[in-house]
Length: 247
Image (tube, rainbow, N blue to C red):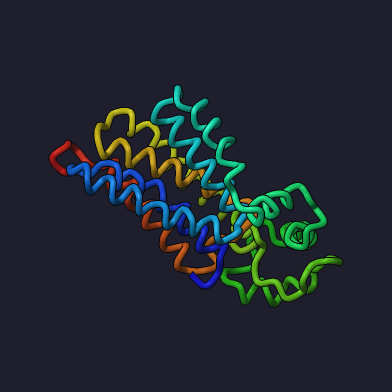
């Protein structure tokens, strides 16, 4: 998908739903086949070397297990710890950079956000307008030492909304997504079978990707933005299913 971080975000959005699809086939052999096939996108996610993507998918897994059966949380934690020795050295090295604020990726973001905060100070109500061209034209006036002056976005989804649309645009988005997650969690309690599992997977995806939204602008590439709202539509459609026959 042209960029490893955006590929990771795409996988985070759809892996939980894909896992539900794989596990709920009527024929056991088909379920086994699809479950084994999930190893391919899982390995692909590792190979993106997207630290935010790894954390997001672990968060999504935690949310899924929490909503499905809280008693399995200890088993999930043990499984994650047990998997660490089997990870390649390159993955472990990449994970070790999480706590290193001098890492080029981390230091760039911190310097970038400092400049963006000054932009928000001046344009918090109206925003600067939609799209990367508006940001690229204005940001050099606010760029701080250590940040690239040619940045096209804020490297943070939530901050991007405030910069582009002002505080009202940010509030509108947060209301939309938080209400949808709340509705999903409430609706899944009254559903059964595939509908229930799909709603849990949707909630896991949205909450998992929220971490990536804290350190990435996941809509910079339109394909991820479309994927986000495809999943949004799936969640609304499943919530409106009236009976098991519709499945």
